[in-house]
Figure 1 (cartoon, rainbow, N blue to C red):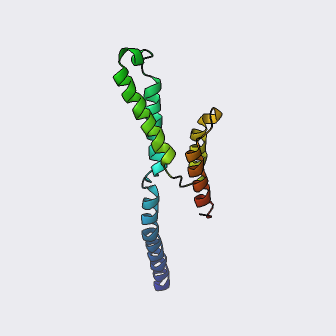
Figure 2 (figure 1 turned 90 degrees about the vertical axis):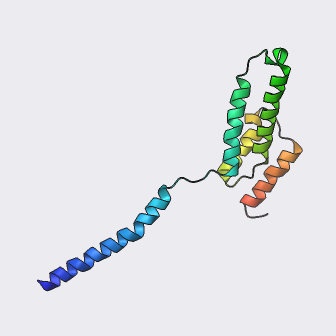
Figure 3 (figure 1 turned 45 degrees about the vertical axis):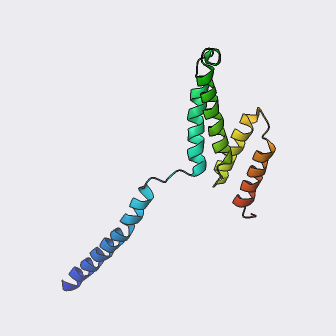
Amino acid sequence: MSNQTTRRGAIGAMVSVSATAFIPAIAASAMPIRPSPFRLAEAHYKAVRQRFNNIAGDLELNDPIAFYREQEAYNAALHAVDSAPCQSWDEFADAFRLAVDDGDSLPNEDLVMKLLADIRRLSGRA
């Protein structure tokens, strides 16, 4: 009978130690991950683009200063997302899609050079 108690105690202790070791790992994996600089810039750009696309069509004529401010905010957000470094191939694909405006335009030379630098860094050839 004492052997059974000892075995049960040993198994219980192993389970307790295992749970103690895994619970912090589970808690750490459940913590929110901070978005990358690219994802933050992308989210800001999308919000500014949405706002810019929804301004009144006659704002440029009725309030050119307000229109200019909105246009400058849009340009600044676009520059920020274009300048943000990609930290994964997923981000690179999204950056490229933004750079070519879903195939509607060509990126400028500076943006092409930045994208090539991202490729070199992500592929380990920097």
